[in-house]
Length: 93
Image (cartoon, rainbow, N blue to C red):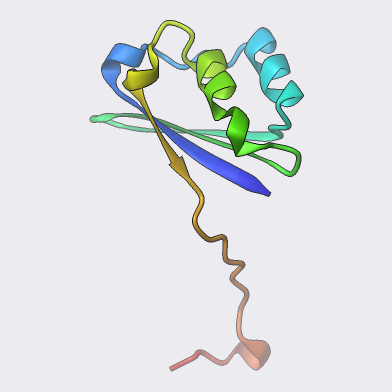
């Protein structure tokens, strides 16, 4: 599964996730979207089994159509780790 985090400056505008944008993202192989925000800005997590991060510029243009490429930082996944409880409820301590 590929995942990217888009970190938008205020100049990028608000993310657009209506039906047209969702269709374009689905065509790029993105199957999950999460919006994250705080007082400093907005983050958008895009992920999908069929998503090729080489097409992230198309995804950025779909989510932030009024921004420019310099308005959005793209963070690529480095490592994905699954976490599960230890057997028999034991902690690793």
